[in-house]
Image 1: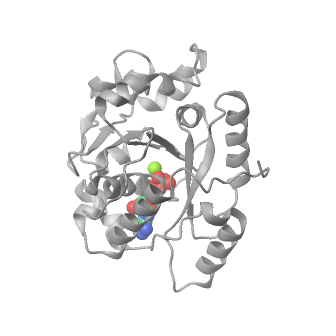
Image 2: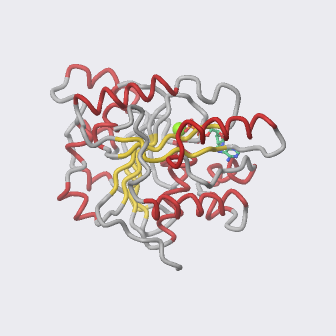
Length: 275
Ligand code: ADP
Ligand code: MG
């Protein structure tokens, strides 16, 4: 254990990008595992009805399992639904069941519909769970579930796939973040950009990388996650890539990225308007 610092204050990060398949879930679970490996305590919130983060963390999420859905509806306290991941005793997970698919609509008519998750993630509860980081795996949309994540978080981590159209739709995400910041959560900021599925054999990957670095500066982590078959195989075994193949490039790069996040703190925040 060569010290990754525990943060002075708890960090709550929403992992968001309304595009599907960019590496939100993969990055959430593997960064969480990378932090947990160094004795940092992490709670992953699975906010995607597909429940892929729950699967990768080896946490039950069949219908009927107490989940983030009942917590957001106020039916049960957070602690009743949190499970310990098979990946590490330092890694907790609030699972998602398919019931969450209905929440996007059910929430519409509810009081404080944008801040149901924030309320559940209150300080007392998180202190009792003794977590240093909360990582929220958002669904591929900008609907109410993602808004709940953005209201609950103080930081946003945006995974960007090194592919065609990587930056398409990013403007919409950033303006939604701005809206949430001005109306619901003044502390919200984009703290981290993570480039994923980098394929060094393509010119395109380098073009996307330099475009992102130009635009986001130091908010983009130096570590880039390579495209690797091990990363995509791991969830099939209900594992993170750190457990599935600890020596793989995928595992190493997620550990490096986790270290950068732990070291770079909440600084390097991207401010589109220069504030
Ligand atoms: P999202 O949560 O944004 O929809 P996922 O994390 O589920 O994206 O990733 C989409 C797909 O790409 C999954 O099948 C996943 O296993 C695969 N994948 C993610 N990262 C990598 C990588 N670095 N190398 C290879 N495959 C990856
Ligand atoms: Mg996902």
